[in-house]
Image (cartoon, rainbow, N blue to C red):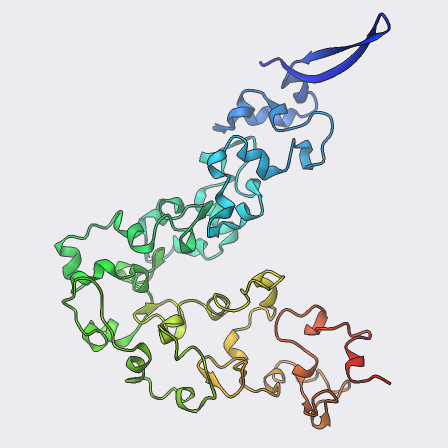
Length: 404
C-alpha cells in the first residue's frame, strides 16, 4: 500500500512565524473509506497501471476541481499525460468521434476492466454500440476473419488515421497484408492488374451473403465475368483502362432521360462522373450506389468549411431517402428538386395548410412576385426553428411579407 502526499501546505504558527507542514496519508486506503466500490475494481483482470499502484491523486484532486469526478484537468488532457502516443490522434485527417471530442471513457474504463486495453466490453460489441450495422455481421453467411475474431483493430486504427474509414493503411495495402498475390490470386481475378484495383469495389470487407465476401447487388457485366464489356485491356499490369466513364455508362443506360433533357446535370461533366455515386462492380445498396443515399450524398453536401453546424444537423427528415425529394442525375432547377414548387411535400403533409397560410398559383409572394410554395417559408435542411422554418415564426418570418 502506497503512503502518498495528499495534503500539503498545512500552516503551523511557530514562534510568531508560519511554517509549512506536510500531512502524509495512506493513499489509496483513505479513498476507499468512502469509495469502497473502487477497491473492488482491483479484482478485475485488467487494471489501469496508475490505479494498480494506488495513485488516486495522479488523476483526481482530493479537495476540489473544475472538472467532473474531481479530475486534475480535462479528461483528454489527463489521459495523454501518460499516453502521449495518442496526443495527436484528434488531428488526423479522419479522427474517431470519441477522440475528436476528448471522450476517452466512452470506450475505456478509467480504473479496471474485464477486457484488454481497459475497454468497456468486447471490442466488436464496443464498436456496435455506435455502429449499429456491426451487430448483424457475425450472423452473415460469410464473415471476414477479423470480424469473426472480434477485432476491428486488425484493419482500423480506432483513434485516428489519414485514411478513410480509419483504415491503418490504404484499402489495398490493408487487404494485401493477409491476402497473398500469388498465381492463384491473379487467376481467380482474370488479370494481374487486380493488384492495383480497389478491393472494396467488389468485396465487402466485413460480411456478406455471397461467397468470397462479394457484395450483394452486382453489375451485370461483373456478375457474368464479362470484364471486357467495360475494360479495354485486361492484360495490363498497372490498371484497368476504361474510356470516358459517362460515355461508357451511356452505352447501356441511355434510358436515363435526365442525361439529355436536364438544364442542370449532376456531376456528369466531372472526372469520374457516374463512379462518384455508383460502384461499377457491386454494392450492398440498390442502384449500385456506393452507400445509402443519406450517407453518400453527405460525403459532398453539408461539408463546406463555412457550415457552422455538424453534418448530421442538416439531415433533418429522419428515415427519409434523399431521392424522395431530389432527382439524382439532372433537373431543371439548381437544387435538383423533383418539383420546384414543393409539390413533393404534399403526400406527407396533405393537411398542413388546409386551414393556415394559403399556398398555390393564386397566392403571390410579395418578395419575389412568384406563387407561394412550401419552400417560400420552409427549408428542407438544417432550419433554426421547428417545422423547418429559417426565421422565428412569432414575428420575423411573417414580416418578410406582412409589413403592415
